Length: 233
Ligand SMILES: [Zn+2]
Image (cartoon, rainbow, N blue to C red; front, side):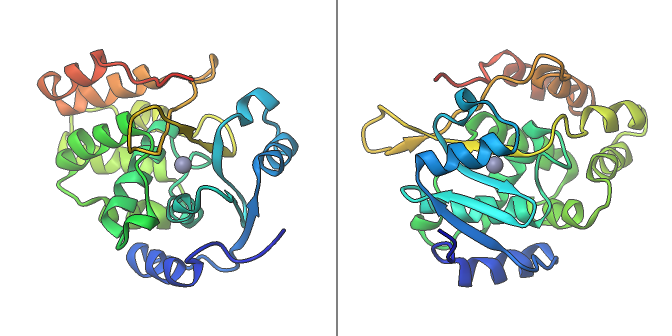
């Protein structure tokens, strides 16, 4: 089952060059729905949680569903160090998508997923920092503690924030993460993605957003906070 991912030969150097990190040995696996479920089950996800997953990254290994080659770029960005093993899932997914949008050179290389997270990163986080997604991604990918690094970057913009509290809220909640996609009913869209609900023991998305809203100002954040951030199965 192991072979190169579609466009891996051009996407790996592009991600490495843009984020300034080496991906080392990338082991790409093309899997079908059953294969994805098996891999995720071994990583501790329930069968129910594997439903609709199109991409999965675990250590050196990247798993891409055969009918979703467009998720390779997204997974390689995770592989570079922007992922929910190292950073709050909401922020990691939104930033990964924002980076993918900046790096894609062909429509086949990317389809939008995690729309709410992406909107928040592009509309709130990056303007607050005055950075492009690739720039922030390169800093966080190289950081040994991305949550703290991001909290410190935000604190530079607003010294009144509690960087320790923010750092804790920006931290990863659980290891390994799937990328969920679903055949959508929207004509022509082909696929849309949704986000599974946050685990009940986590800070939850709203808590994270609320924390960063304190940084960003209510006028920017309130509409986002009130808008539905969960997709539907
Ligand atoms: Zn992802």
